[in-house]
Image (cartoon, rainbow over all chains, first blue to last red; front, side, top):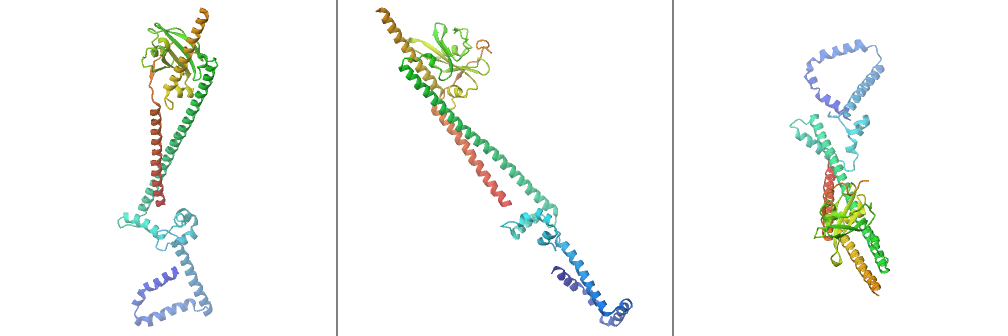
Length: 333
Length: 55
């Protein structure tokens, strides 16, 4: 109906015809009739009628085509979404479809957006530059939000990984402690059966055991080490953890790296009959179990492991004294 | 094979940490981590709501 209304508008607008004076009709009428008769006077009436009708339809068809073109052009008053969809389906999919194909789409909402854009543009709502700028700012904001969300997701994944690692560390710690308990049980049974010796004391890791004698540390036993031990002088071998440890009245643990990748933890033990011993743990830096038990204090209090060793050493020392007494009694008899 | 007796190495004291402190420290770190996750989740939800309104 658009083209017909437009035609009606044209007719209303043709007010210039009214300017023609009725008095001049006797002059204009014969003139026009004369001109028409000189051109088409030879044609039959039926042919003239059909020609007039075809001409009218042709003109109207051309006008409709032009009008439909306008209906599919954004920015002109004749624009219509459905015409745009029918004539330019690809462009429609790229622009309008994302707005229209929504359950909650309303033209009022779309109007609000457009109105908000145009209201920023003082009295120039047709400015495409503002629409583009608004779209660009929206696009930038969305891109920024997406980047932020991706960053947040990455951070969340890291935090979740850390929590998972925490669980694994806790499970491992429990496993390490259960392993220690099993070895302690085993050693207690061996003690009852008179089979326990210092050689059974490697349930944490390899070790060396020293006794303080005068101004030196004499090796009692070592297991799980390179075996290259010697008597340590308390005055000159001060870079040895065992020497530093034996001088520590507080019986703290002392640590050093004899060589890259190797750890040594030494601590002093007060023994029976006024003796002083030094226990040294020897282990590599890829041994997470021993690191956790002795060095890190991350999950398990390492002092308790040292106390366990101390208790076993006292037990073995006490037994050795009683065995010596028995031997001496036997010799006396 | 490097030898233990060759180069002097720095001897350091291992600070003893009571088991209770170890547990408290781990609990504090865990709660801190969970709090961070909660805060990030809240911010994410807010942003998603904003995006939903815009689109």
